[in-house]
Image (cartoon, rainbow, N blue to C red; front, side, top):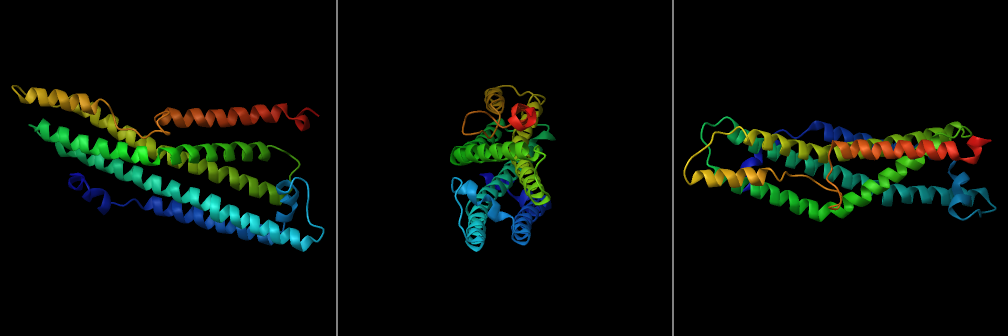
Length: 263
């Protein structure tokens, strides 16, 4: 049933998603090459091994490069891959909802029974997607929020050299940008559903048995289609501003309470 609304978004595949993927993947590779060239990774070895390090500097460098490669290949890249997948899914669902809206908005008469089944199929598919990836969305948002918080907290320190500053500024900017793009894509689905709900209210009224179908359709559309954070809270624009406010507020608070700041 969803194939009826599947054509437009395939023909109009957004190019900005490809640009985002290319930018973030290439920036990860550039960051790793920059660390290799700068040769500062071995300074982090004591942090990984509870203050211990190898006596020979070569061993420290090799282990540091392996740890950084592990973080890129098995932590950063999988999370980025899921974020890109989630962005594409959200964009497809949004396009389906918008095309569904266009299918009846300019008609003088509508078959509300058919519209009810179409919208129910779209909502069921969106709910199935949300149930499947909800936990991954939750863990990804937690990871990006924590990474953004800690990187912002570290960048506020004034005792870092140039190499560390560039690394942590990149870490903050990339994680925060991915968080914004991911949640904004999910929020666009809710916005498209809100547009359908507002459009349905001005549809022409029908009489007879079709009036019951119209009321059922209006009641279903009023439930809205939203993606959630593991069924904890729906992802809307206020969620983006709320989490961003928490990140910046607590980063500034902990920075002002740090011993180095007081001294």
